[in-house]
Amino acid sequence: MEEILIKTPEQIEGIRRSGQLAAKTLDFVGSFVKPGVTTGFLDDKIEEFIVKNGAVPATKGYNGFPKSSCISPNEVICHGIPSNEIVLKEGDIVNIDITTILNGYYGDTSRMFAVGEISPDAKDLIDVTKHCLDLGIEQVWPGNYFGNIGFVISRYARVKGYSVVYEFCGHGVGLHFHEAPQVDHTARRNSGEIMKPGMIFTIEPMINQGRSSAVVDKNDGWTARTIDKKLSAQFEHTILVTPEGYEILTELHE
Image (cartoon, rainbow, N blue to C red):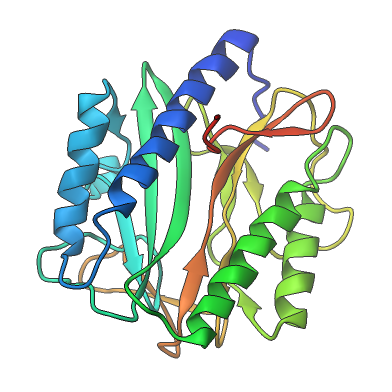
């Protein structure tokens, strides 16, 4: 089993700075999310902002991924490839997922955006997904089991009538894009590894209106959609285990 890295104070500060830039990038691009805009245009804005701030987008070229962000509208669960062919329309919901590499350190975060006025059902899905992330983060403290993150997320989502995507998960991050551990969003209580101070990982629940399964586009090899074409939502933060509990490295500091 791959070792979970314990980051040094210097590494933690580098990852924190990268995480802050990733969060600022989401704030920046959010002002451009409106009906009539293409996801390709948003990706261009994202790359421009990241590069202007002395970093590079981690996704560009990663295992052949062609763009600087993942932009996933409506039934796209994750890994949507931005394109000038994909035009956002009134009522859409869209996840924008950004990972920055700043001075060699990675910060990874994603957020849902509403395109104009959205339906009550879409808003409820977004609200439940955000609360799933918050519940997962509250499980982060030294000595707790990683499985308890997924346990509380899946329990809450199912009570609310939604399903949890099990084919994609959170992951260690910071010195590399993907590190140990795997952070599942549905898990048994008190399962998995034990959290220790200095561990850094993402929690990124993907919650579906319908069935939990994903279908990956055969043509591009990346875009994962819900099997029944119903809506999906996702939020993601990069989290540090501290001696007292946790720090959200991708939440903007005042």
